[in-house]
Amino acid sequence: MPPSSSTKRHRMTAAERREQIVEVATEMVAKHGFNGLSLQEVADAVGITQAGLLHYIGTKDGLLELLLDDRYDRQGTPQDFIDSGDPAATHPEGISLPAYFRYLVAFNEARPELMELYMTLGVEATDPRHPAYERFIDRPDQVWDYYSTFTWRLPPEVMAAGGWETMRPLVEMAIEAMDGAQIRFFRRPPISLTEEWARWEAVLFPSPVWDDYR
Image (cartoon, rainbow, N blue to C red):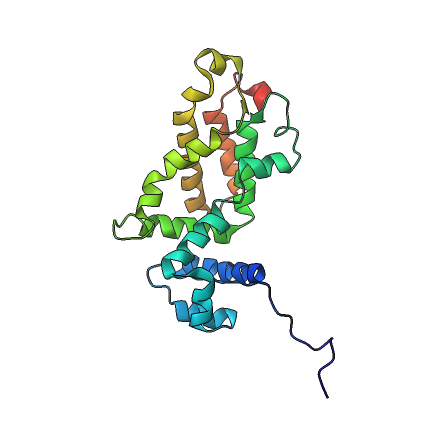
């Protein structure tokens, strides 16, 4: 007697299987690093053969690209902030930069596995032989170029000094401060990332210049 429809196993779509692979690999790389990652272990964890895994990722380096492109870089973006409908993101004059960074910090704090993934890969990629080495070297340029595709609402003092084009040092310092706070987040005793960021925001975006632009 054939199994009823209620007992049939759900066959994953290609997109669902790829998402499953990325989720499993994210956890493995965050905990153990990419260098020691076994594709067979990933395949076993998702319940497919290694040949089946390679069908979705191509190569081990292809899996790394999926982790960075689909799992990390495409989440918590300025566009996501706009899509959230937050008034600070949808102001007619542009996005509030301090508000976006608060959004990003809260987003990351709710997803510690993504922070672990990024930190683990960032340390490994200091080795020129690592497949993500050039990517991390180029990351400041890539982030700046991407942020520059959006319109940001800036105080008159900043606009008078040259506007967005003068903001790169501040943006880079903010991201570096965020990276440091994320390391402390995983230490003991743990800290609140959002509370720690509030302290940094007061320094990076001081009153009274930024008070009406938060």
